[in-house]
Image (cartoon, rainbow, N blue to C red; front, top):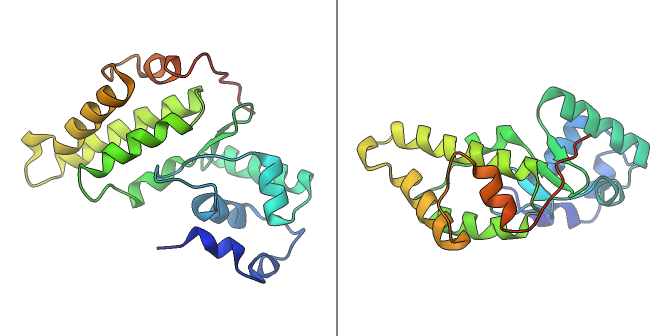
Length: 178
């Protein structure tokens, strides 16, 4: 487990050669930085804040983000500052179905946008696959817990039109991506 306070330790930024932005270093920061939440791979952080935190020039940060976006490692909506790392979920499965109640509550703090909707859809698919591999696949414990927590938190069921369900709860959001 990597603590988010790692990024506050004296001298840690200097280890990454300030000013020498690198996509791998950025990816590690996006997975472990102070902006992270209990939602694996889904956070709210902008390019400027990232550049400032890492002591990088804006152009270098933009370049590193572009490499990660082109590789599919990062999906972002820069207008809402929602950043999703799709590959992170597989290494951060919920320990039990109750964990999902907290994850769903955290969705309230992520601005409405297409990236958030895609991340929630991917999470539900991941949970279906997790249930299928479980000792009791017929129970669908993870999927059931997620759907119940979602209905309780947002007052409506999760459906195929998931994007409308998550985003409409928070008002209209932009899905502009760069």
